[in-house]
Image (cartoon, rainbow, N blue to C red; front, side):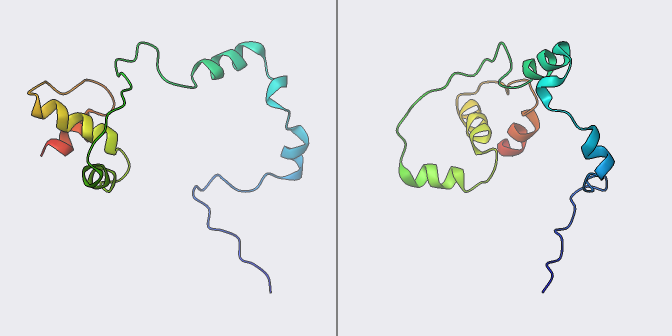
Length: 102
């Protein structure tokens, strides 16, 4: 019995052709400036204003927060900011924070 291929997520993610595979080169053979640029864009942003902390919370509270899905820590940050009457932080997660405040 032949297995059906998995559905493609994007229209342009077709398997590489033999010609494309033949032209492919390892990443470390790329120009050094390209390697530096890509590596510089990986990881946490410089100047990050968040501080990692370790606190103990009630298990049911953590469970409820995690059950809100992906982004639960950002929403928790927004909930704490609202409880302390602090303005929302600027950045890409502002929309997620605003949603959690409604």
